[in-house]
Length: 346
Image 1 (cartoon, rainbow, N blue to C red):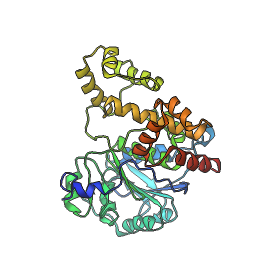
Image 2: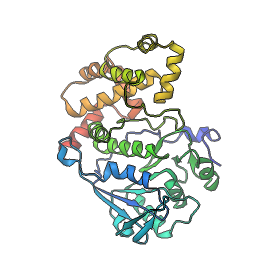
Image 3: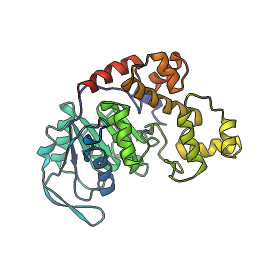
């Protein structure tokens, strides 16, 4: 069994969960592989991101060629007892820029043709992504050997024991290692998909899709899977109102004592509640929001680095560079050169 706590030294050599590795190769086509007993909800999370044409809405979101394929086209049963008519075979994945493995009953055999399709996608340099138990197919194909990965925390021990060469982290939402992304269950599939959109097309496009889906534009892949409430509920809750206020005032300092007072809590209760709602400390959450704001400014404005630092709330360019490198493994200048040029030719 290869778990993070057991092989910490190996872990330190692996890429971070959120790693800036934009290649300049744009995703245009997406193939999602389904097998009998696949989960319709997790299937829908990827479809919501890649399968809906939002290109006419004026936010720079591209239209993807989204294909659903199966080893044997036809009536494919779902876990729920329903079925889906799939008209395409695995040849539809042969030239896709992204191949997504839908979750399925992990104790069932996956046809060798599916494993070959996953191997071929990785060999030609395409992105390969799994949602929830779809990671078992990637592991069986040998794509996760020596790599960090994740799956739903219910299945992580099983994945680690079944495939000892795989480095399973059960405490994160998603992991990017090489051009392979694995994600935990349900909403983490959305997080992983938006992460890939952000890597390929920038923060502005990811935020536009997230806004259309009414979900948070970014949850760090390193965030814990099992927290009381991973996404603040909509409505009039004081904590949600506070988060919205903090986003509108990123350029201000936010001491914990003052934040706690705004929601009429003690600092200790506030810190505990904040982590339960966001999965992060107030300082870490603020820095992640400031990085997102800096990404948008670098993509969409001509502000210099000092001005971006002030507008995004970091104040000084040295702090912007520090947090940008920590979060994205690149510099603000490199990020701007990549995405301004990349998006300008899109």
